[in-house]
Image (tube, rainbow, N blue to C red; front, side):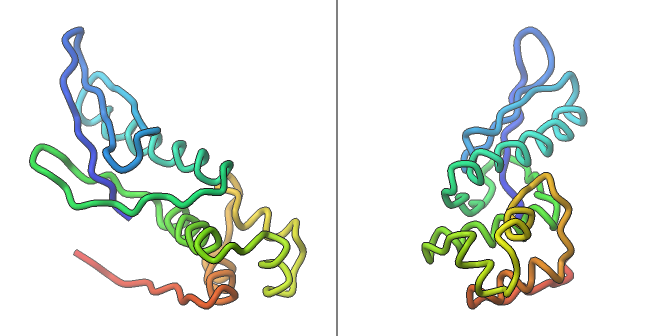
Length: 139
C-alpha cells in the first residue's frame, strides 16, 4: 500500500509532508530525505487512529503531479486490509476469534499495530473472513 504524499517547502526552512488520503498524517523535516523518513513514520502512526476508532482506512489514490509515494510496511498493510474487511463485514474481535478458533486476546494482538504478527497468522485471519492474502513481487 503506497500513499501519495506532497512535500512542500516551508518559509522557515525544511519541508512539510501531507497525505490527501490520510489527513491525520502530517509531519516535517529539514531535508527532503528526512521528511520522507518522517512521512513514513507519520503514515504508520496515523493508522493507529483508524484502528482505535475501528473505522476503515481509505485506499491509496493515484499520485498527482508533485506527489511521491510513501509505502506502508507489508505487515502494517496486511493489518490494514484485515481491519478494512472486519469493518466492511461488521465482524467483531470476538467473532473473528471464534472463526479462527483462538482467543479474543490473540485477535487483539493481531489487530494491534504495535504487536508483531506472523504473516501466516494474518493470512489465517483474512481467510477467516473469506479473503485471501495475495503476495506478489513488483517493480
